[in-house]
Amino acid sequence: MISSQTVTDVCNAIDPERLVQTAVDLIAIPSPTRSATRVADFLAKLLQDEGFAVERPVAGWSESPAVAARFASGTDGKTLQFNGHLDTVHLPFVPPRTEDGLLYGSGASDMKGGVAAMVEALRVLRETEALTAGSILLTAHDLHERPWGDGSQVNELIASGFVGDAVLLPEYLSDRLPLVGRGQASLQVEVTREGVPVHEVLGGIDQPSVIMAGAELICRLRELDTELSQLTHPLAGRESVFVGQVHAGEMFNQSPTKLELSGTRRWLPSTTMDAAREPLLQIFEEVAQTHQVQVNGQVAVSRDAYEIAQNDPLVAAFQGAHEAATGHELPVGSKPFVDDGNAFVRLGGIPAITHGPAATGAHTINEQVPVEELVRVATVYALTAISYCNS
Image (cartoon, rainbow, N blue to C red; front, side, top):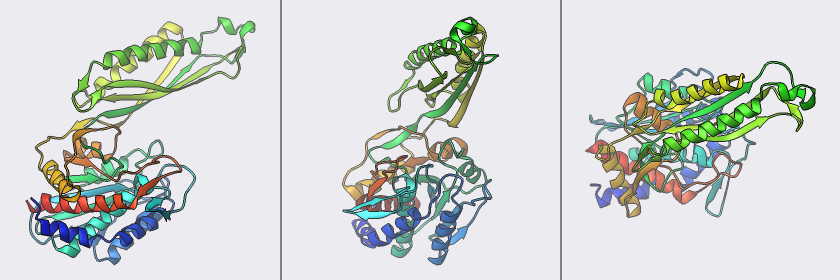
């Protein structure tokens, strides 16, 4: 239980202007995935200048070493980690601006606004001296956004020990407490035949058809999706396979030599990655044999599925903090997307909660986040740390 005085002290210590300025400064430095060097350097210097102990672990990506800042209470206890990514998707850069209580710009939603809220929570914990046990580890990194990044830098941070006993991640999910995250893999399939593109009436009709093979492939994937729909979780819904793109041919009466198909496979914690992958590979092989074509199908795993226990101490600390900050707890549920929280749980065995601002426009040029939401997230993070580490 967090005392009312502690809640008041934390709320009074949050400085919205300072928080927004941090977010603006981060957004102002373009950092598309694989190019986060300048923004990481800026964040490291900002934290160093404010007196925090900062390390720059390479974590497998020397072009842009990660940032790791620590704040210790001076008394033994648990470590709560705040983790965020500094890279943004590869879209035209939008500079930061604030207007009518909203912050705009590249990364405002995903997730430089959330990183700024993490930094503000770290400042407040030191200024209020409310953290009486344990410590905070703040980490920030590159290589998050796919397809340009592969998540390997955060994987290396986990493998090299830059982890806490639990972790909060400020992705733009605010309406539930996600206890479950489905695994996700991308499907990239090429169906090809030998020879060259040829006119329909000049032999094209006699060639193996990559389009007919693709049509059967889509039908088989739909059948698989129907089967997978029977695998369900009370919080996370069902497993699935989804086709989102299909491309073939140059004109209506030409037999093409290649068809490209892409989509996703999502699975529940009860399914292994191999079990998620194998039926797809079998379908690819059978379609290739039936249609006398080559089917090169890649099932690239982004993150594995996970589940954390509802009675985990992090869950209780977070719910108490959220209620203290907002007046209510959050309903438990699942995470609709994959993020670095999947990696912390599956690779490190570290309970992870994804919770960030109610922001919009992620992966578009119209990212925006209410300033009051950044303040709320900073408050919830600071109060969660106090409850979790002091217990």
